[in-house]
View 1 (tube, rainbow, N blue to C red):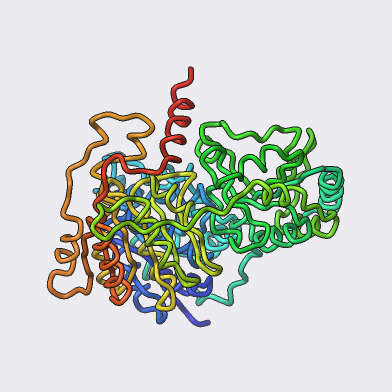
View 2 (cartoon, helix red, strand yellow):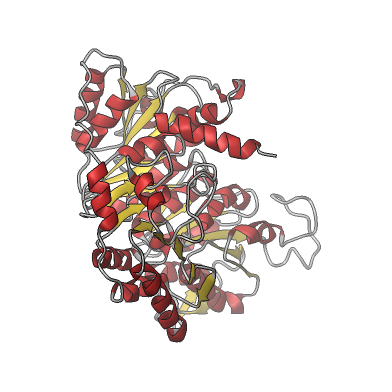
Length: 559
């Protein structure tokens, strides 16, 4: 029988699952494990500056590839630092495998106290901390358990599309186990109950076909359910107006003939809310209704109008059907509905295409409108946008995505600082044929700025637009105070700090419209990470942020 080590067994399973990169920070409990990973041909280590950033990078990598992503940390001090990133990945259904080195198996029976712990005789601290934010935890303390637990961890991560925590005792990483056999990957979605599916399709089709003016709205769960194709089939069959919720931007092609924009209440695309909220049959596929996506609970989706198709259920008119699969449900429903374009006709009657944005004079101070106009001009089918929490959300929503362009942001968890690490992960996952473009606010950037050095180290070539308005603008609009002010940095100058005489990062500054145009020209011709520091007035933000912020503040302050 051929042999492997525990570490190489896991490395093989990672490769068999489709991952080629893993993100890591070394520590004494994971060093032998890292040695075993580095022996595996085809598996690349991306060393990060800290564990939180490594987790954010793995999050972005999972979004860009659609598959397994891996972060390797050390026990407790490393693991607890990555929990925040794991929580964000959990909220967005990302298969993130968190691998941690663990204590030597001889320490627990010897009743030892260990460093990196709470100075208590408890060797289950880390996995207990992870339990609320992962789909499963596994702890390998006996070498005979390693193959079974590794296989269970990888398959659970992919099947549940949730993070999984896998801890491996440091003295077992190099221990011998049988070599791994071929891996059978779990299906992307479970098999639906055929009886429930037939009943759900019949009920939904009956409701939709009786409607005068149905509309179809896509939600973020379309991605994790693998249901984007089924959604488009239903859209084509219905012929009605089609929108997306704000957290689903990029999941539906924006050149689709029935696409009317983002439904986000009063801060969504022009005329979109009027069409959705006046409809007598609102079909939402894969939605998440939270205070952010509903603008502080002010959007209008009454139960009597709502057909709510979730990842594995359908709710309408007081009935619920379970045991479904969203992708299969949407495809089956497409074959049962009648074509009804009344809502699309109504939208076209009301909607006037906005006039093209007018360029600012070259000497004019840079504004958020001009910044957005120039970014729109460089988007191509090979663009990957990474959008940070904050006013960047609202600016990103205003960008029209060319067919093939991709869009990544974290709305449910909304962890500021996410985008810098995610930019690293998306850029490395996308390779040389795509270009990552990021919009990141200065306050968010200060949380995770050091990961730009990892971009430079590994030859990633994103273009980062750093929106410098000297504070937390999104918080200002929700509830202002002195805590929203930050110390200004020389953001463009950081690129030379991170280069340290050997990197190829480029830092540029733009204070006027002309300077931004020049900076973008240099960025597009440069192969390497580029940061363009965009000087903006503190109060220069989208009107949508002002409206959204006031409504979220009202929701937060209700008694």
